[in-house]
Length: 68
Image (cartoon, rainbow, N blue to C red; front, side, top):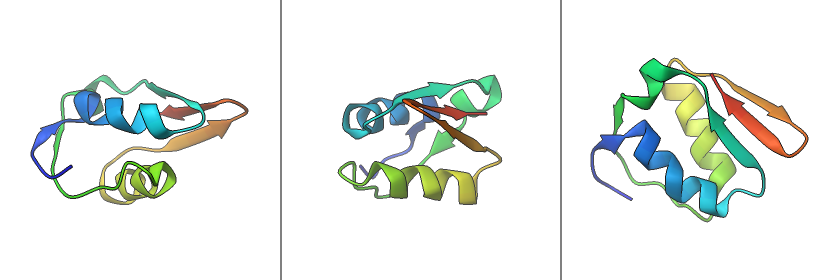
């Protein structure tokens, strides 16, 4: 994926490939635009890139990842 889109829309393809449920709690983050090339078959790498480049944290629980 390599276009500028909102984080809330960006998370949809990642959700399809991530084994756990992804929950986005940060309303400010959902309106933020991201761009770049991400491989959706490596969802952990995508989440790692988000937490390293945006003001967001990921809390990994059994069966769910909460982005806040």
